[in-house]
Amino acid sequence: MAGGVRRALERERGAAAVEFALLAVPLLTILMGIIAFGLMLSFRQSISQAAAEGARAAAVAPPGTDFATRKRAAEAAIAAAIPGSHTCGDGVLTCTIPDPGTTGKTVRVAVSYNYDKAPVGPEFPGLGVVMPDSLAFTSEVRIS
Image (cartoon, rainbow, N blue to C red; front, top):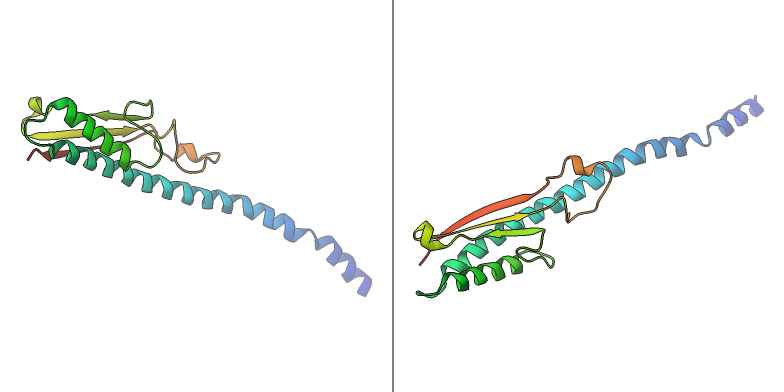
């Protein structure tokens, strides 16, 4: 009887490793998805903040400041608010700042980031399906 139990245990020895391998792949995929999605949400907040900072920088320029100076101030504020080395018009980050003379007493800044081209988090097979292609935000501030 003892020999039969021993043979049965020897046949079951690799079962735990196989079960772990079968469960580890989906668990790691879910973990990587949670991490990547969390990083994307954090970066999304940075893009939103960058749009607000750019609009604020353009709006608080001294009276009589020309549009080109306001636009440069807005673009500098946007670049400073976004983690990494992206600048407006670099192919990944797009900043739209219309002339306030055409919009009245407000400055409107639209920031768009091509997330598909330059993702922030880890790249993992299959995550591209649930991640956004781009992140875009608009902020409008009254000129003081």
